[in-house]
Amino acid sequence: MKSGILRSLLWAILNAETLLKLWKDWDAGNLMGSKDNFADSVELYMNDGSAIVGKKDSALATIQAFRNTFASAVSSVFTITALKSVDKDENWALIWGKEIDTDKKGKVDSFYLQETWRFNKEGKANLVYQFKQAIAPAKK
Image (tube, rainbow, N blue to C red; front, side, top):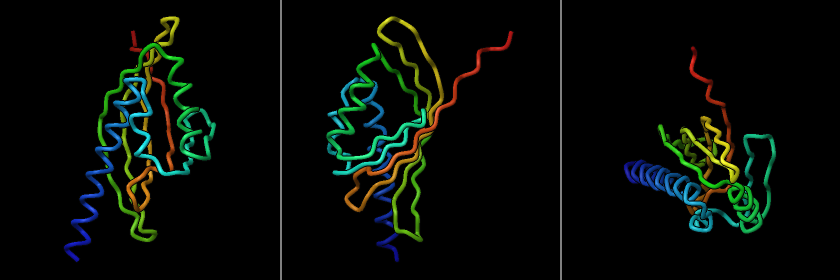
């Protein structure tokens, strides 16, 4: 029993570190730095309702092309929570934060993000759900 708890705790720490690296690579504009953290096949359900489902290389190329439309992205992580689904023996991690994107014309967009990530038995991300909320302007 103790070894199972320790193994789950280790996976939780590794998954949280993986998410931090993924967000840093997004900010840096280089998703290929995180390529090895994804399973061969992935399902990514984005905040705009679109889905990217398929092979890792194709999915990452699509996301990288989207990231390339921004001059900069700055993320702030509020919290990460690791979860273990005992009924399905799955490892999940949830991350909440804020992102400020600047497009190549200088337009700035700020919003909150929540992402839910599932990791396979090898510790590779294979499913992501992303949710976005606009930041309300300050009241006058």
